[in-house]
Image 1 (cartoon, helix red, strand yellow):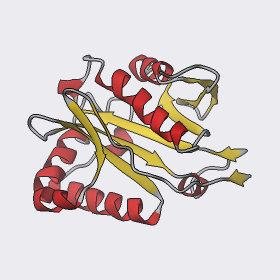
Image 2 (cartoon, one colour; image 1 turned 45 degrees about the horizontal axis):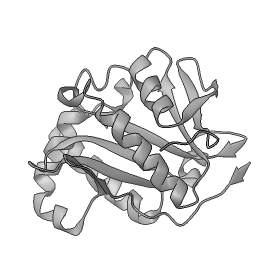
Image 3 (cartoon, helix red, strand yellow; image 1 turned 60 degrees about the vertical axis):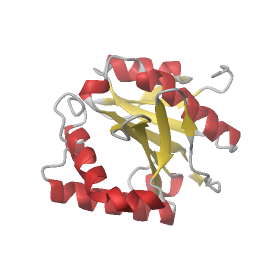
Amino acid sequence: MNVVQHRFEPVIFEDKNWLIHPFRAGDFERFNALADQVFQILSDEKTLRFIPEKRLTSLEDAHTWLQKSILNFHTGRSYLHFISDKNTGKLAGMIDILSPGFIKQYYTLNDYPYFLEFYLISSAQGRLLMSNLLPEVVLSLRNQGILNVAAVTNRKNSASKRVLEKAGFQYYLKFDVLQDLFKVNYSIDNK
């Protein structure tokens, strides 16, 4: 069971309307607003339709979740990135990149890739936002030499599957009774 972990560099990407970024020093000043926006995303019925286990039930839970995410980033367990509207600064979603070492604590696999999890608030869904941004995240990881990248999605979540396929992922195997594992196929040019 091979666990290969690279030195991770935060993903920073921006286009005309959106910015992907990790928690920044200046974000401490708006921590409460960020926690509120995280709570809105992780309590959104449509966002959590296929991942109810990710639900936050209170603003206090959101504060704890965000604090834990910041600690995980700095200890190399997982790397939370925000998708922010460049005009308002408001969060539309999040992308969490889970390290192989973190994954190994919870699953027994033949090899341990970096896993991507993504969340998009329902008001931003259906606008191809994640379809346009996730390939940029995968490209950033590839440029860092991180080539073993995977994601798990509920078999019934056709929108998530389409997003993954657009980002260069292909079905790999049945992960559990509800979910399938997709892995990046680097023989496909993601850009």
